[in-house]
Figure 1: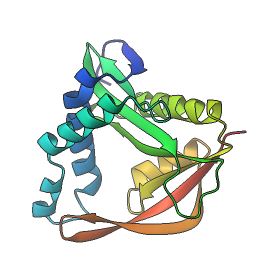
Figure 2: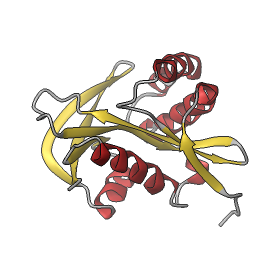
Figure 3: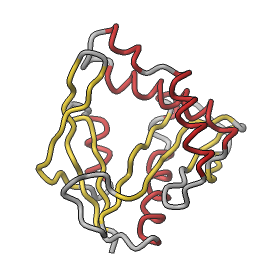
Figure 4: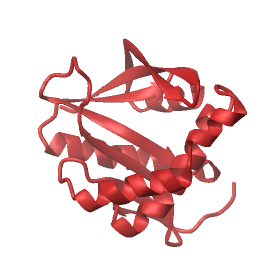
Length: 176
């Protein structure tokens, strides 16, 4: 295993937008590589995602403050969570919106650390269950979730990736 520097986890800042966008795009492409045509992989545009994250971080919404993981001051992962966006969610259901780690840093516990921080935030805000949508064919992410106490709840939906529909499965994790 390649040796890496110390991993630091902290709240994301506006200056992290470019790093988050890079990790988001690289991770998204890796997850969708075998699921969508090559031309649809360009839907993970770093410039567009950087603008999104710059706007998101500038809002300063206290109910969904993202976390970043850094190695040598470089963003290598992030997580984001807040109130559930699902129509069937109750008021005590939170959601992990995103958790991505640069694929070069997979297998080092960074993803679990980021998700743990997100779950702790949701618990502190009074949620008693968290949901997390995972690409149905992403065996790596599903295995990761199941290893860490998440269970599929039988719900599915589709996300649009360019011109392709990709199925997602909803997972739940108790917070109490």
